[in-house]
Length: 320
Image (cartoon, rainbow, N blue to C red; front, side, top):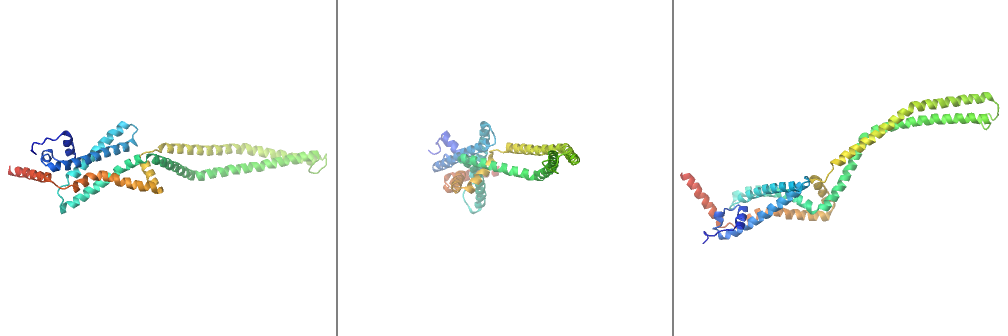
């Protein structure tokens, strides 16, 4: 009766996922359900891996269909690895614990990585807000670095500009003072206080003309240098803005940026941290459940049939 059992396509698929041999498991009545359970867990892990990798690729690839294809491809790789892990677990003996430990570490590593895109999806709004704040902080740091690099040059130019302005101001005040002295001498409101002293007025007029000429000459000589300094300062500011603009263009909300934002959320928010570690544990169990189920479920007649079949094939090969 057992030998005539015909499994349906659903059972065949689940048995394939659990790495069970259809010809052997269909004759093991109890193990049919056990391997179907493992197959269901493998199916859930496969779907979870595909969705997680699809979301991961969607953070770096704008076309959703490309991200979906890559997600399906990577999900298939994870499925192949999980099937290899499940297939390698047989009857538990003392010698197999090292192998199981290696398989467990591999499964945990895969699970932890797959948990990251899933967590980014669950905390999507919070992560994007934190990523925006982090990018603003990066812009401020970049701006401070640029200003620090250009500080010495800007200070030198500003000092030169201030020195030129100070020199021109001194000459201008001197020119104004000598002109006022001449005017006051001529109208009797200052100087000697006496009208008609032509000699004193002419001397003051000569000093005023000399001061004005000195100021005009200094203005003619120093104005181009002052304009050159202003152009240099303006060019430095333009280059700073251009460098900041290029830096802003490099900023994004890619996978690594979101991971950093998630880490900052965990560090600064206890409520997020608690749920993060809870979800990491849950998502890790999704990846580990097929391996855990394989270890927890008792070994039935399927294992005996498989071992006997393998021994028969070895014996047949050796006898030829």
